[in-house]
Each structure stands twice: as structure tokens, then as C-alpha cells.
Image (cartoon, rainbow, N blue to C red):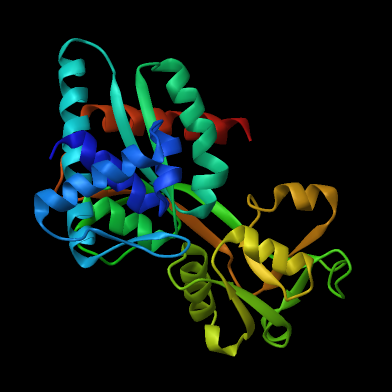
Length: 303
């Protein structure tokens, strides 16, 4: 067993495919299969189940995956620390981002960062808030940016950005020319929600409660696993929804979708830098955090 084999195994688990893992790390599918088979022989058990369309880790595979990610993270941290000792910023950093920051905010900042620090490689993992918090706690990601606070005492969170959510409707909707509606009107309209682990849904539940309502009062017709899926649902008349204005900026600019306020309901929320409370940040992680805060501050001044 070596770190490279563990890295190959992690890619197979994350991408749920031998071929996709091979394409990512530039290995043939038989070579990837051989590495996983060597690990199974080493540990004396099956690590993945090969289903018809995807590869799923067994219970033993899930256990190995958690420890393998920690070992890989420790390797990356070691390389970064030694590079830092020699006065260089070098290494690999895994960052988690929930849907809005992961898709609409972090890529631009990461692009600027790696232009300045050309010996750094960054891996951006995108998932809902619960996944990103879980990955941060397990050591898969060294830090995350998410759209909701967590009650887990092992997590340290710092507010980075404020986000303005809006009620989003299609251009031909009966409310399309309105500036705002009441909460009661919203409760009578078909509504699409994000999945249970999303920061968008958590923020919506919290804001409804603060206004004296509950999520159960909405006429929920669909639950969707991504912001893009919700946007497509709105466009195709499934229902309306509350989304970040950042996520639908192109559609709002073109007029395909319209945004409204809701009387008496705050739709403000924040994105939070999320770290493991009891794990020291690596030098590379700290450099990125400082860069992130500087970029966000400069962007805020330019608005």
C-alpha cells in the first residue's frame, strides 16, 4: 500500500467510475483497476462494488476512504510546510464550496490565486452545506465556504459575504411585473425547494420562522438537488422558488426570469468560512484564507 494507490482509490470513490478516475489522473482503466485490486488484496476484503453504471464503496471501502483522505491531506500539508520553510508557497489544497460560492464565487478567486502562486494546485469540491461541513470535519477538505451556520461544536465559522436571495419566477408568470408579494400569496403558489442539506433551504426555513411562518405552509411540489435544477424547474413551469440573486444573474439580465421581494420576509443570508475548530490550518491554507478575504474586501469596495 502506498499514497499513490490511496489517491487512485479516492478518485474512484469520488467519481464513482474507474474510467473517469483514470482520465482525471492520466491512467488507463486497467491500471486503475489494478491499483484498487492491490489494495483489496492488501486489506483482505472487497473495497468497492462494481454496479452496472457506477462504482460504490463497501463499508470497508468507506472506512478506508476516510483514512486515505486524511493521509493524503497530511502528505499535502507536509509538502507545503517544507516548501514554506524554504520560502516558497507550494502544494495542493482541497477546498469545499456549497453550491453558490462553489459555482459563482470561488472559481474566480482560485483563478487569481494560482496565477500569483503558480506552484499551487487547488481542488474544489462542490456539494450542499452538510457535505462540505462533513468533508471539513473528516479532513477531506481543509476549509469550506457554505451558505448556512452549523450547530456542530467542532466547527469554526466566520461570516465572509452577505447574499441577497429573491423570489424567482418565469417571465410569463402572473407575478412577473410585480415588485413584491405577500407571504400569504407565496403560500398559495406551487413552490420548489432545494434538498434537505442545502444552505438555501436552511436559510429559508430560518427566515420564515422569524416572520412567524413555517416551511410546511408552503405548497411544495418538488425538491431538487441543485440550484441549476431549480432554475430549470422554474423555467419549465414546475413552480417558483427562492434563490440567490447571484445564481440567476444571467437569467435576470436577459429577462428570462424575474425577481421579487416578499413583504415582511427577510431574504438575507451569509456565506461562512468553515474550518475544523481543533485542527491547525496548514501554511498554504492560511495563505489562501488571507488571499480570499483580501479579494472579497476589494470586490465589495468596487460594488
